[in-house]
Amino acid sequence: SPSAPPVTLLKQQCWHEYPFTTSLLQSSPYVSEADIITPLRSSTFANIPTVLISSARNEATSEHAPWSYPPVCTTILPHLSTQLCVYTNTSFSNGRGISIFTTPSIARDFANLPAFQDPAALLAKDVNTNSGVWSAEKIEGKGVGLVAKRNLEFGDRVTAYTPALIAVMEGELSTAEREKYWRIAIDQLPKETGEMYLGLATVFGIKSVVVQDVVKANSFQLDVGGATHLAVYPETSRMNHACSPNAQYNIDPTLLTHFVHATRPIEKGEEITISYTSPLDFTDARQHHLKENFFFTCSCSRCNAKDQTDKVFRQMQIYQNILNGWDKPSKATPEMAENLIDLYRKEGLEGFLDIPYGYAALAYNAVGNTKVAEKYAHAAKAAILMKDGQWTNNLKIWNKLLENPKDHWSYRYRVR
Ligand SMILES: C[S@@+](CC[C@H](N)C(=O)[O-])C[C@H]1O[C@@H](n2cnc3c(N)ncnc32)[C@H](O)[C@@H]1O
Image (cartoon, rainbow, N blue to C red; front, side):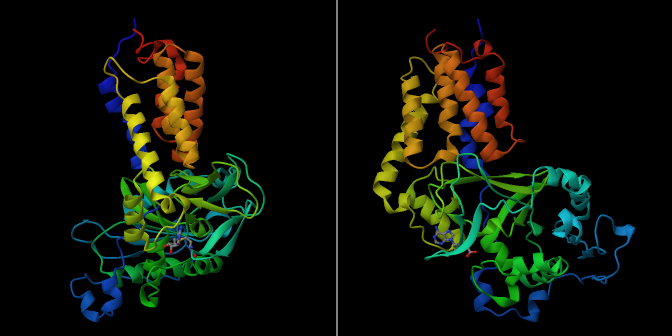
């Protein structure tokens, strides 16, 4: 009979936890209100090592390949024990260009990615091509947002873009120093890309630190070379937040590309939204996160129906706890997993269905119904691909079950 180590196995797999570790729209720690109140003074530079800026506008030479200019670097920073430099490739993706502020060693990691090594890889996936399904328009109370130009179905692609700027997270430079480097990064970009960047929304509207202000309002987290970077995708950045978003995003780190897909039918003229915070949280926590990090008060349908939303969320947690418990006897049933799926749908959480689909796959397998278990394992995989992309380990969990559901630890576990 199959071995049954479910509790520890689930813990190791942590699959029930991953909604809380999704890479969210990232609020940058840079630029604080203090920067507005206290004008930047020369004393800000007091403890900063002398900056070695080479002439940034030299002719491109193979000496710096794949970078179009000689890297512009700080001195070795004490805590990082390395320099940080601006690297720009102006011909990246058919002349869209890209600038990266990172360490020399991580810059080499970037340069080795398929995004740089294999331009056909971006073309093959139609990256940086206008999908024609959205337009950027003014939305009452939200600034600019993306609106559907035609009806969209589940799974339709909305956007796929590479960033204009990627900057490593560090706490060593002062706001003024950082701005100096990041400004070079933007100035070295092709004109159109640089202008698009500088036209994006800001949080504080402070001209002297505009490059960081744009990052504050618009960056996504991207992990490369073992370090967290902030990335700004100008077109995608126009997408506003909703706690029941109709689109879901994932970032492919090998292509540096941010993909967005529709998670339910979207009508022509409807706003296309993603979630900036975990929608699997109580309303106060979501509101707090949005206010603290993105400086707006969310008035989406779920926030406006706080009592109802929180009541449903509580019920979802109860179901999930039962379905995730593998002690016997158990109250978990396939019907409970079906109810959980319904609640996710009713709350407009179609982009997060990988979780209840996963519970359903296990709940059906646990009573020996391998056919329906397989159906839900496939559905969980499709949802994971949309939410976490193809590189996530979470796919392996369901591939394992699909190899042979009868050999899986969960098979008939609750009827034995
Ligand atoms: C990434 S930008 C989104 C695009 C932005 N609306 C623009 O005009 O470019 C994030 C900013 O948009 C605004 N925003 C996003 N979602 C919103 C919402 N649901 N309600 C109000 N403002 C929102 C906030 O000012 C937030 O800091």
